[in-house]
Image (cartoon, rainbow, N blue to C red; front, side, top):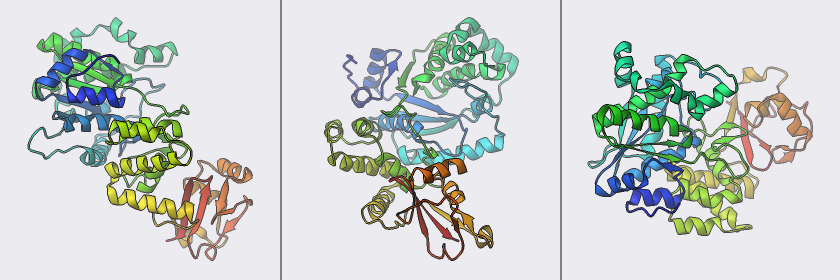
Length: 417
């Protein structure tokens, strides 16, 4: 990146690695230098919580507000009813309005930790596109907005083309998604003077559509900026682990498991993750990322503590670190480990199989995987090797909590409720 920005926000985006592409570096940089810029990122309400994969863009909104500008979190109450087809092999399951509202409530809890919606100057705005999409008149919309879209051009977008090239069905419902997203940008510009849409680089086509539509309908100059689609250095999609999605809501993933996710980063990712997911100075991120041997583990603990403090608070980060020390250094049982509580009825007279417990504790996805873990000497019970896949645990065996481990880094407690 050879562009030298004047504005604080663009400098942060470039220095810390948030920027993949921009529709007009100079135009956006000048707008940011002249005064307050309002920018948005859209989030479809497909789950009750956001996950680590969303965190990069949430941090971009946080930096936007920290550098004196106004972030909008746009909840897709309307667009979720259609579903974004971008780079998906199949259609998303359609959710009811009630499910969408519940999901939005869950997602709001996350944003409140990263953005200030109550400050006097440049407060963050929480908006819902159902406000303008739900009441659209179809014929008027086709006439006023649809006429600006070329089907030939829409078919050329990578997100659509990749689906058609694989001869996978793309419904007319999904095909409309990019028009609705473009219309969001137009409405946000009209209602709130919003000048910038940000998103992952998979959203580039949708963002460009919104800029083009706004220019045609309102004759306004607006901008788009995308972030790189992150993978870990070993090629995994960011935010996914063996146990599934790394959720940001504490009721869907414990702060300890969240902390552990960051603590388990590979050495090669530490410097980059510190720049993207913490607010430590860039020089300090570079210094920590360049450490090696046992020192890089100290850097990983700093990473885990900083990210967990932002998401769950300083107390949760301290408790997670203390639990990790207890579990790893002393071989003990920490207070904060993910816990599976069983009722006496679930045990019955026979007890419960160790394979079932490993699956229910989230340490394996299936009985087959649990048995393989035991066969390959990857499972432990109370820190002792677990070799018998046929082991049954009854109420007497669970009179005090039992610690199960998969490998060196994943643990859970099982106890009677």
